[in-house]
Length: 334
Image 1 (cartoon, one colour):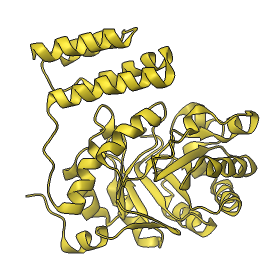
Image 2 (tube, helix red, strand yellow; image 1 turned 135 degrees about the horizontal axis):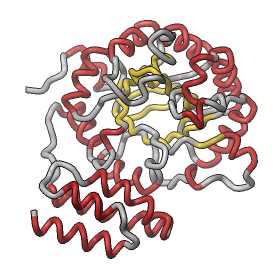
Image 3 (cartoon, one colour; image 1 turned 180 degrees about the vertical axis):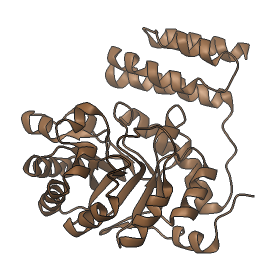
Image 4 (tube, helix red, strand yellow; image 1 turned 120 degrees about the vertical axis):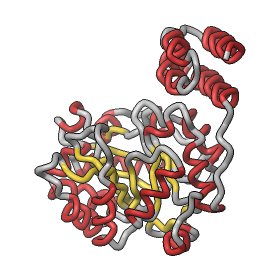
């Protein structure tokens, strides 16, 4: 039987405090580039109405040069609590972007110091800041001074196995003004390979006084419980586990609040969700949304006979109707 220890359960039964704000859930939806737009977040929030969600990471440089806020920063007034995640290596650009994010309705400003992608790190952003702690500290200080909402940081345990510097780095982020730290238990060199090393999250939790959120390999309520028991973290953040499965945050949240597991959605419910996702992307972004839906629809297609063939066909759809017809036909034949 899945169960949390009394000590962990007592801690998690209280609201999550991030600076001066309170969140009534210990399960967060990670920012995911090219994924966590308004459409995706709405699906996640249906099953986890009290959880914090995050926008896709927005470039402070792009925000500085654009007259209008980029679409990835658009927030529905009804989707609180939400955080806007920013990335760059220039404290002044980051502070400027943070002020604009506040005007958009962000509940917190999250600073990306963990993205491992080359096009981000080679420009000094994302996980490259683990190698530049002085700049990282300056960014947090300037952003914290620029806004009156909490500033948080999402990062990794180090650049590679020879440069795991997260203990000192995390303490510097707290000292600079970060009011929560989310830690992905991998190095930059790992990318998304291998296992997340939750033991480092446990070590960071011991040296910080601000909330620590565990991230990495949270694919089920069972994994969330194992992670929380090991790390004593203040919550978990779901990332890749929600791709094609926006039910996950709500499933974990429900378990942490009730001690009970929700019934898994049926295949029809999952594929109906896929259809809704496709339709909503079309309504929000037009033909570009249909193109973007191809990857999402592929993620929904797993764990059933014919999933690979359906995934292959959906990767080439040109319209909502084409997608609906393929999904409906597959469901009938399963």
